[in-house]
Image (cartoon, rainbow, N blue to C red; front, side, top):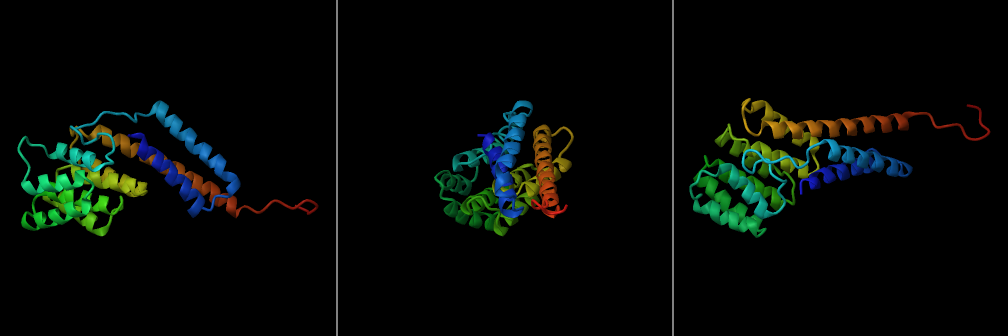
Length: 230
């Protein structure tokens, strides 16, 4: 499953080149080949299957409600039963009923504004309800989760993942890099997080290089027509 976000990034880069940078049709195959070459190189030299740390934080990218709940719970697992509103909202999320989960969690954080896990669960539910988009209410919930538990990596990690899923790799990189800079030197998630930031830096650099190349091609003078003087 870890390859899905990587492939989505490749698709995002391709769509950006075609729709935003106006890559000519005759250059589509070449650009796709460059992307595939880069992904193949990453598969050979990178570590797409790097194990999670701590617990399920850096596990395979979550897609379903079940996986999303499991990943979040692993970060906050204290060995005690979570509050009833979290148990019920997680049941909604596991069934894909994210609007119901968000409704319940809104009431929960109103009564318990310092519950970091409830705020994070609300943020994730709002992102899922918005089909993977980081909406202003979701961003606010992520921020409140971080305020409630400043030293916890969960809000930053899940916000970065949400940005990545929504096709915003620069925002994901900035969030994860900020989390990396705030993390203690011995934090068990630093190695995996640094790996993710480095991979995003490489991808963004490649996209910028391609953008500059295509910009230079657009600005270059067209070749002379047959019979014309250069």
